[in-house]
Length: 392
Image (cartoon, rainbow, N blue to C red; front, side, top):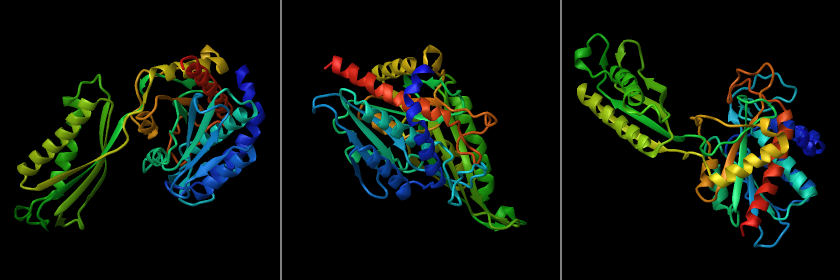
């Protein structure tokens, strides 16, 4: 990792920032303290910025060339997650019920580290640093786009820490990286009654149970296995007492797909099964679909730029790819609906935490990954500016 030495000088500062941010986690659209920490660092670096206030985000700009010069954006997410941290870290969350369980504290530190490097040695182009709220819930990327974060931007790059790769490895792949995310609610309305006289009632629990099992066949028996897809029911509510037949049941779940035809088939199939099961048991079943984040689809040229940047800082051994997209969702996808870009994953597996997933109360990552992330963001900006300047 010889070329990562460029970020050694900013590493102690990144660690301090990451730990301070980790102590002060804030949920989606509540990132007041978080924004103030980022703003203080931007002021220290002398990088101008715009802040939209609580519920919005920060757009910082490093303008080194004229209006016609290439402009490259880097994005970091600011929000934390609900959950009680049990990492035992000396810099653990000071706010009960909130924690940085997804590494966003690291993402902000990486982009701020890259900002320091780019400020010290300006590239022959312009850089936009986007610090957005509400990636986890609320599609904060939309807020930033509406605020003008992508005005004049030629391409955008972002990334995420992961335990699936080691420090010194960066995953770069073209095409679909994360899944389309849709949510659904199924409401079963039967007829309540006494548990001793089921013939007088329509049992919403029985109908709900049939639905839970039936919807599993959408993926296992109706979808081509070549197209990754998931239907999960994660929440069930029904009943008031053990001897009362429930009149209503509510099921909530998520659909993850990587293909538009598959997405439509699963949604249509969910409605079809719900209607049929309802008719079978004389219950009324309603299905509500909530469309979520579209898939992250890395564009070709920007993926090649990212690959060159990885090889430049880590060598060819540091460049890894993936065979299948993640079924998670990521609102970086909204930026890619407007400008080309590439979303990568930074190896950050920490010894002893290999089996601890994102969003776990025990989640942590190896802070050495901060050096790699800052070096990558610094290098990818320079590679992208050179690429776009040559093609202008």
